[in-house]
Picture 1 (cartoon, helix red, strand yellow):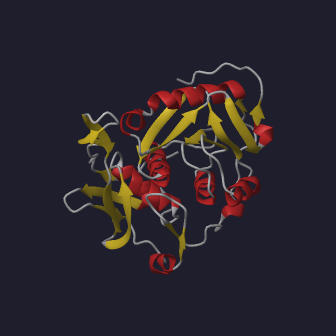
Picture 2 (cartoon, helix red, strand yellow):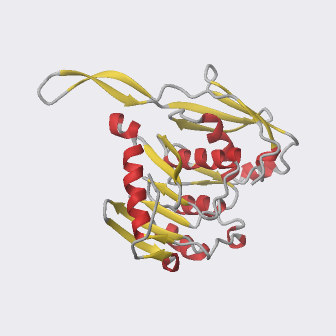
Length: 279
């Protein structure tokens, strides 16, 4: 995956947790970490696009991934610069050429079940039938179990403060490639999408894990990243299930410890013991 025109970006991560005083059941005052949350308004070529509520862990990747998953930009090569300014709670994205049809795309909005976001631009099902996922890849049951254990050990903010969702991108042979936590599950998946573009990562043989429920939008975003395996510790919605069948994703829900439910794409899942390096 080419990154010949990698954009210039800031690296403006905010503090992820803050300490406040809380009173426990015994009446004791305790210093307690809580998750950060702040608005971040995305501007593209000085035009306001959306305001997201975010933890602030990877704001540049979040902005790039948001534009990718909203289909407002087609390639990272279209982006010249991404500058985050927390004093104004904004991120300014400059493109190499103005985005064609941006005004028309923004006229059509769909209210979603997403936490941290809530709308998508354009038709949810736009281009979904053109997506083709690889059929020559497989995931074993042992790899799934190793992934669940690896993710559990990565959930540092959730363990200390709660109130966040986590998403991971994994290679079945090499382990977790990137892990992002945010107050909204869609923010976390978008940040990973942005990092994939920035680092030139091909999703066609990867596993995507999320702590959040598998709604239609989550399935569509995974399919847009060409990822064939989608795993969640939570459940799924009817529309999420129907779209997963339609695009052929191997979707696993309620995945905790040694329990899981395989819903779609059974042909890629191998119930056998196999070597794995997930860690």
